[in-house]
Length: 304
Image (cartoon, rainbow, N blue to C red):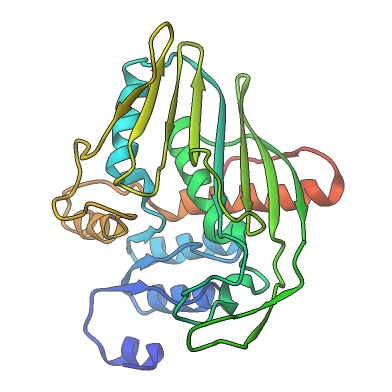
């Protein structure tokens, strides 16, 4: 099919995977659920937390399961870190740092049109910032308050190679985000999301406890976990980690999210990547944007 409306009308598929560009997620996800089909959607699940709530209500009304990327909470290195925290390896955590960046455009060797990543409603926070946000909230729980600075640095860029060479791409979305998250109880975290940094040598995620530090990449399964216990030297723990899926040795294991949907439908597990979690991360980004506009910390209220 080249028309998803026709596919939904004619296909007997019980579930649909939505990999469309960000700008199409609202309408596509709404149509999939309204057609009575289960859903796995790329991130973000919706353009706003309000729309995510509407999608959740639609899924509930039809008795459907909706699984939302990123499936980072299921990645083997995340499960390993969660086990370290459960055993108290680094003590109580009161500081953390996350980083998600797209790289400075143009992206050499990118084989497709990069415009959707820079369009209004997209940008580095929606596309890459969600990774550390989903990881931190999976490990530390929901965020209670947000303060942030958000800037718009680049106006446009020109694609330099590939089939879209010469295309001028407007940068419509804010491209430099610095967020401070308050998890309550004295627990604070900083998250940066941008496409104004070429690269970094910092680990994408760090958790600082009173008895040690964990530094790791929550996305790429081939990267080691660095563990520092108080009074000891740094320890490098290399993959494969327990719970790793056979055959996946590098990159992000997005297939875990699709497998999770199937496991939920077969009754083998309970939903962990639902629209409620996706809506919470969207509320964090909305609060960050509001904080940047107003210069005030913004509280995030629990879902009704």
